[in-house]
Length: 176
Image 1 (tube, rainbow, N blue to C red):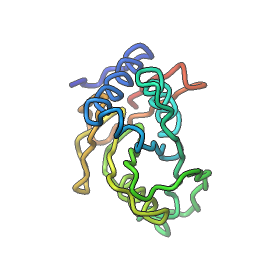
Image 2: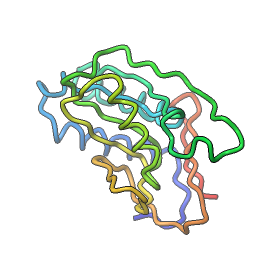
Image 3: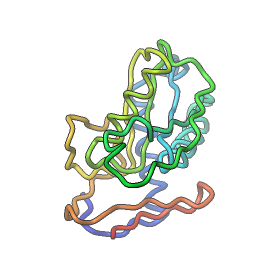
Image 4: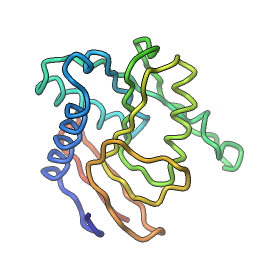
């Protein structure tokens, strides 16, 4: 477990490999053909693209990739003074009977994932839903746990974790 350290690009790439290995350890090659990846907008998208590339290189399977905006599913809509910025949702495949892996950068309260679960069911009925996160803060407010975790980080509640990826190659994790 990392405590209050800055994680650099090399570490993030190894975390991506770790998560990809966790996925391929759970599903046999035939099952991987039923897997689809959905990156939660905005920070989960570069992460999902990198995982897709690693899985393709490791298995030879081109796992379908989509993006999901959860802004209108958030439980704090109406509590903020500003309306949320709506990002693109692009799910160019059927999720019915698929193994859906939701991907996000940081799991903290669980509220984003709760919203994503609500949103994804509007697109169909997946066979199975899994959650992959680069960073797990371990202080969820909802009974939501990640299935694939890059790293557990324990920091003070008043601090924030920001993952920044430039062109899906240069990634940094900042603790503010």
